[in-house]
Length: 132
Image (tube, rainbow, N blue to C red):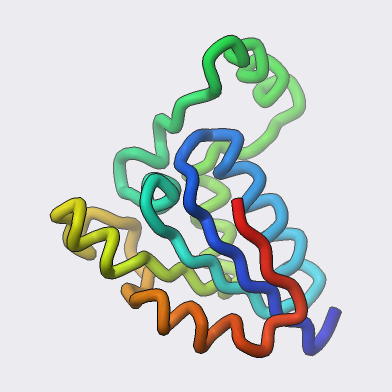
């Protein structure tokens, strides 16, 4: 996947959403793709210092927790660290942060803050664009 660029928009903030975003991002990065994720609205929970440690499962899907543990699926906190170690660009939406009165300090270290234009600039030559 050399020379492949993947652009992901993370707009939802539950645990299933986080697994979708980070599974795809980590798989792409492991295949030598350049990966950037734009976190907006509830998606900001995925990189929030506290919120990403306790993301909710959809109602009625609590039984998945047992399967995650049985299959040794990493915690979201671990996946965020893995993404950072692999050089995945994590971009928090400035407008959403402003609307929600959140500062960069509320998020895990190493993120970038930018608006939609920042993401568009990153994604304009992406081979793959996804939204979760």
